[in-house]
Length: 97
Image (cartoon, rainbow, N blue to C red; front, side):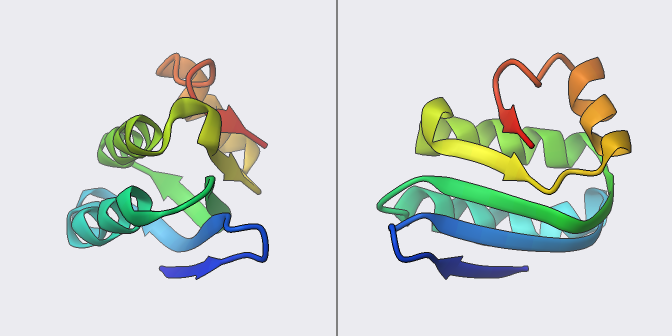
C-alpha cells in the first residue's frame, strides 16, 4: 500500500495484490487512520488488486463513512471485483470506476 496526496488534496491510496483477510487485518488501522486525517477526497487505486474479501468490503464502508460517501471512491477496479461490490449491494454506496 502506498498513500500519496495529489495536488488537489485528494489522498490516493494504491493497493496491490490480494486484499484477503490477512492483508486487510494488517492494513486496516493504517488505511483508516490515513482516511480520517485526509483533508480532501480519498481514492483507493485498485489497479494492482486481483482479489477482495468481505473484510476489504468492510474497510471500504468504514472509509466511506469516515471520508463522507461523496468524498470516497475506488478507481481502476477490475470487472470481477466490481461484481463483488454489486453482489454486496455496495455499488450504490461507493463510487466505483
